[in-house]
Image (cartoon, rainbow, N blue to C red; front, top):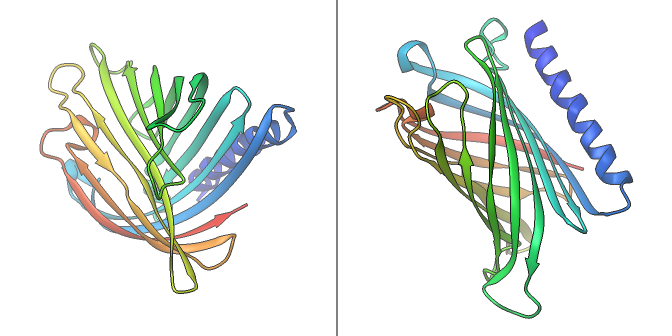
Length: 244
């Protein structure tokens, strides 16, 4: 139990600090924080990739500035199994705007992006630095549609890799009810001996009960999870979200 509480406390403390900075900085234009709980079955995360059921706690913050934006999230996996908590994975990225479209066009803006992926569990603790370029696209029907292309250097592997990331959010109505279709997809090239290219996507379909609460489903598909050849995940998850 202590392991789970410690991980959640650490993630919450860091996020509150980031949120406070975003809200008090004069250059901040918006800030949104969300807390999610997800549950799925048959993740390929047991011994030698055996199936495993897991509950996941996620906390995230997005903040906009006059110069660009930042995004942070922390996942604590296996919170339903106190003795074998999967650990914590955090990602923090900042984008600096280098060009904005003056008028309409398919590309709304171009950014430089820097990111750190932080993983801590019973097997490994590491920080993976990343950096590259990002574009905001003007896609009808979407609140935002972003692509990132970054260089990636995992300190536990030989060599380096490239990651392409797509992030989207689209809201719509069915009758009087509000819904959203959102998520991300990552493709990462192989890095080091035996590490294969992997593809991860997590689309979400959410019903927004009100401005703060949403419930729905997330589908996680991970081909060659963590670069392990043949270790694939295909997991539907139920989820609840609180936004503030």
